[in-house]
Image 1 (tube, rainbow, N blue to C red):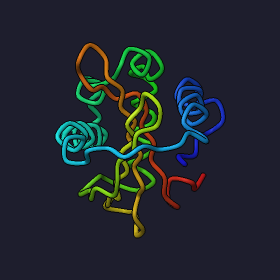
Image 2: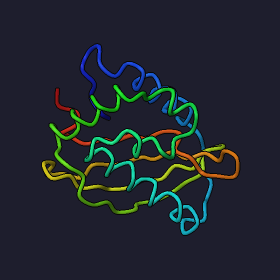
Image 3: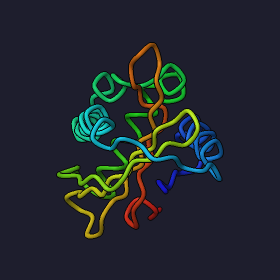
Image 4: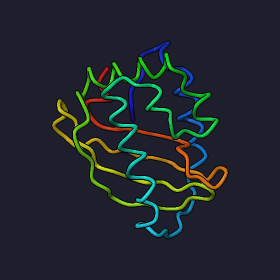
Length: 148
């Protein structure tokens, strides 16, 4: 997973740990991948391009309330800068799979970044709020991100 420097991004770590714990061990259920991709693909694309651009407004546009409060703008700025320094800019993604875990839909992608030789695995977690699918968790993993 994304390696964090000591003292940085504490709120993000807590939010990510919460979602990882909530999803750990949950059995997955089949989903209509076509339906899921209609909202998951554009939201995930938006988040990844927002990291490139350093745009918190764009990055957090589709977050649920808890995700917004867990990832304030300053945390995003540090995350965005660190991501670009370690693996470069996002360039493309490929859908891998989607699954239902309790009240969440978890969508996996393989992404390419300009300075990362290997794939970056993206895990986007969605939940329905007010009839709309919103991002409840977002994880990125690669060898480059794990470097200190």
